[in-house]
Length: 119
Image (cartoon, rainbow, N blue to C red; front, side, top):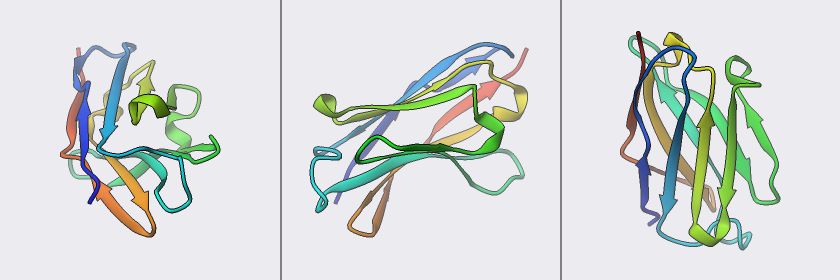
């Protein structure tokens, strides 16, 4: 069982920045038998959950089109932590952001953190 603890959400004005953190309870990206990819989903009001960004063992990343050029996902393996740097935030980025990890075909989820972009 992988435990994920998120932090960093909050209220920010349009154009502002936030950094989300997701700390895993075990080492990340160290073995094919362990956590091989992590990322962030989000679910806005009245919307379906969507995959925002993912980072894989080896360092490859992918983003949903709507955040490309504004969000950056990164990992600190020594801290077992993945980050989502969010810049140029827009009201439509308002959502609950959920961290996930994929380990041998099983997904594990964080508790979610609220991001609200509003003036």
